[in-house]
Length: 297
Image 1 (cartoon, rainbow, N blue to C red):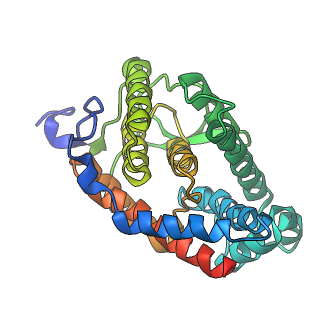
Image 2: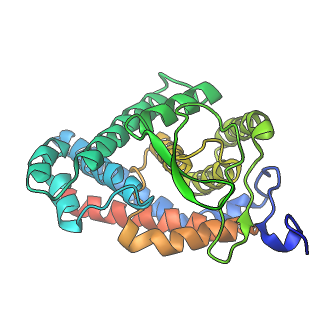
């Protein structure tokens, strides 16, 4: 088949779709039970600041892990655990010890700051719009100046990254087998984002459970892939907003534990099966809720 033939396409782009009417069957009652226990435990606390401490630890881990899973940098697991306990202010010491690079420190700080933008969304100070999404991307990539690119000869090079702007050229990745995974063409990005955000607003009004809505929003955003780079980080930030607005913890996809099932779940969603991604987010959230309950006990 000539170049450009269908045999070279591993996944053809299609406009995003709403989830099926039987979405309630995907919801996880066990997660909702864990959440009820979490809410009850919070009410019994004499010192509510302990809840904020739990959330702050998870936000620190989120800020570190969301870049690790994209291979932007590497951070030793022990360093992540230590920073979760003492806070990101200790990164300078780890940098001085050679355990975190200067580049990683800046990116992690950007990612933690982006969670404050998410909290503005959660608190109602901001609305989820295209403008907000572009601003979120700009914040997440403030200290990322380049992206990986491939020239017409197939050679990789570092291209300047458009920050806070929709992509202007296709950004379809080439898989290890040489085939292409198609994302939304640049000329359709705004229309697709409008549909995504309209559907999301309707889902929130309908009370869709956070594990289903978080998975749906993450995957459909990834299908669009509206930015040149940083789409995964934005998708995980939007998923965090869904869970936090529903009064859950920030959902942390950890590289060592979740990378393979996470990528497999996204591929299953490409094929029309959202359940693995729903279950992954539900399992991660339920485990973190159990840990949080242990801390508060």
